[in-house]
Image 1 (spheres, helix red, strand yellow):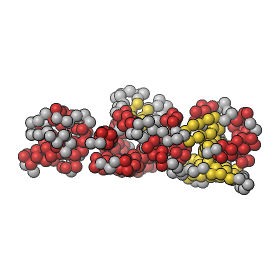
Image 2: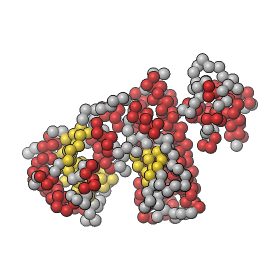
Image 3: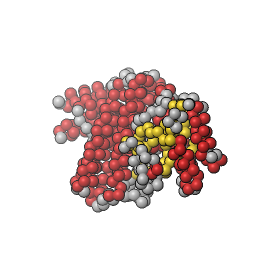
Image 4: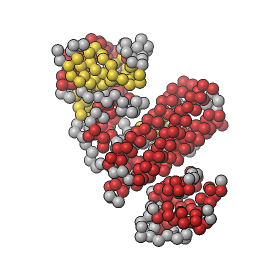
Length: 344
Length: 81
């Protein structure tokens, strides 16, 4: 009876951006990729969307950033029987390849969505065990946790792949570039053409301010916080947040906290590269920004419980604090990178 | 802290940032000796640390940091608060 398990990182830290978190679960098992992943995920970006009453915030970078570090290839599930696909997955694992698999989580007993509505979402297969006839999978919203490992039986995978082929192939095709319905992921050799240049130019891009008084807008880097400060201040005068969007609001704040945690982890890594005093100033700014966001989270919950608009004032002020901290941290970090490059 | 002490402390902050061979006095045009759109934020941070203050966002413009005298005017107003 054979089994195989590839290394997997169970807590990369970007759980609010699932497609990034999956790929980081693979890359962060190898410290040689640290220069790559700490050169990415620098800017948050804000995009207003017509159908939402709150602005949408996400990481600036998308899946195209993995081009040089991960080779992803779609498997045509119509060309194989479900049993053949299980064999093919096991074979890929032996070739050091991970698998992206899309499952309907309402059928998975360990899922937080079990017996609910259809929920087609991806997961990563990183191992298998013929004794238990299960795949080792890392997935979202399983075992009552946001992100965890879980065994899924071969039989269940076969059934799910059949369902995917018969019922969801067309309706979910928009996720093809996210790995739908089944893809292999091969880790490439660590690649970084110019160490730190991606980090530097990302910081330089982070000066995009939202236009005032326009519905459709875009902001990048520290100015995301400035926009949100104005947004919550304006809610005091007129407007409110649709209760159906409270979940999205909370995810947005968590995402922004995750971004600050990532920045602090990046600084720890930079200290190993070159520990200049200016880095400590940057660190202080991101720590302060993170504390302000913790306040924003607490006051957001309080507003959602009481609907007392007074909380918008403190949320607005705290976003202004985050903006002011990041507005200082970014040029300091750029100067650190310049001084390191020129060995000043 | 009197004005002369304030100026002296501000000059010290500036000298930590710009090249060491530049002589600074209260009237030096800082934009000609190394303070620019990038380094002035470092000066802002340095002043905030040295004087234990927070410079308000609306005051953070390069022009306010072009001379020791204008920096001292800004700081005096903040310290007075």
